[in-house]
Image (cartoon, rainbow, N blue to C red; front, side, top):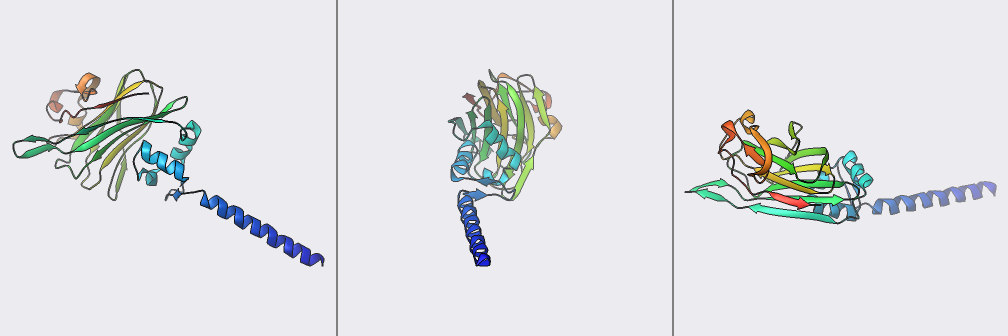
Length: 240
């Protein structure tokens, strides 16, 4: 009789564990290859803050940062600009792309600057992407990432200035190219731009710039061999 009670008790405990495990598993809407598990609410929030599909690149540290900043219940502020093709005769020198600057704030702000290409750019050289700080202060750069079909790359070679930063991005030969910057800032004003090279140049040439109000996209002032190289795409600004 004693053995029967123990056996039945074990079944009950096992059944309870299984139910708890199933309930816990059902709470997750998506799990990526890095083992990051997201609820449906978190998944949608990341789509809004970045873009739908960025979830696959999230690391555990990225996710924990978002949790620690307590951003998933906060409003996302955003600003967006589309750069339409500019033609010179029969030649398209600037393909359609859209840049968006978004931010979610608690005590500090998690800010994303995303540029998405529509199609594959003809010139695949060193483009320049960056952010100018207005009244906001930069706490740190989380990452600068370029992605595309079967492609992803993290850029760590960043040029820092007292009023912002920039990075040279080598355009890959693939589709669905997006360049994504993630930073942490204080509340305030920021300006972002993505400048596309109209001809092939070296990486060293692409680094001939300073950052200031009134530059290309209200961010970059190019100098020396970089003068006349970039397409003067409009920038985007955001007040947090």
